Length: 388
Ligand SMILES: [Zn+2]
Image 1 (spheres, rainbow, N blue to C red):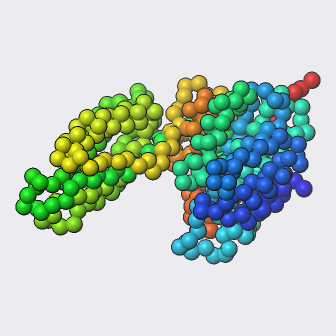
Image 2 (cartoon, helix red, strand yellow; image 1 turned 45 degrees about the vertical axis):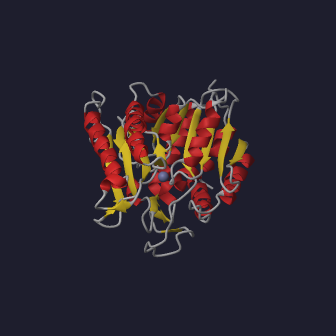
């Protein structure tokens, strides 16, 4: 069987596991672990606290620091309320495309990596090639956060990473982060005619939002020189505000949901510190002066680290040699790449298929894209093989 045929066969098997976030991914992980193990990889399946989800980490080649990590997420987004023309979890194909949930985002990349494992194992590798397949990327990169923590504490860990999200095999060297929060304000209700006797949660929520808007302006002056992001600075969006019952009732409960898209980690730290200080030093003491039970609580809905473009990036050099791609771009969508960059790895995002097809009904990947990905992985095998 050619590598492309093997990839197609593996992909069909991966697609048949409906690994949406509400379901366990263990069956899928065991299938992948088994294939990698049979190819000769050293495989670890690491379960999360619930026992229903796992990350997979595997290595082929020397047991030493460095090397390259091929990284992908095992979960897919749901298919409910989407008009699919056939079973999303039974892969089908036409002349040039393979269809099914996860074909492009991003089991196609994973299938290509697994298909290449026997080739990697047959070589005298000078540097290790690692596989990192995570759970729950689509709901906040949960698995990758755990894996990044584990790798950070290891002496033997990868130096470079390719995150194979669908980029049509273009090299992506940066994306903004995404941090989402829900803030709940609890005050004291009362009659609208006596605002002095209540603590109005909506009013404090309004002041909180006003402070965020001030910070949003400040962020425009913090854009990194030469930033290629659109817009070039870190943004804040107030996505949802809710509170109160009627004009004549003092609002006792209010909620604000907002997000921030940082272009650099220092901006995220700046905003979080500023708003925390404003709550702790001003808003909450004022609320509690009238009503000790008053509360402002912040729930983190998700914090996905951005991928900051770096002048020096060994993963970018390597992948441009392997694919022949000139230059590297930025994208609007988030990935797990920033989490691996945070622990000191050089990272790019580069994978088969187009983000245009991700999360859509009749999701597909072009077979030619899988072939290009296999070319890159063959190049990698040659590049990491001892000669002489
Ligand atoms: Zn994805």
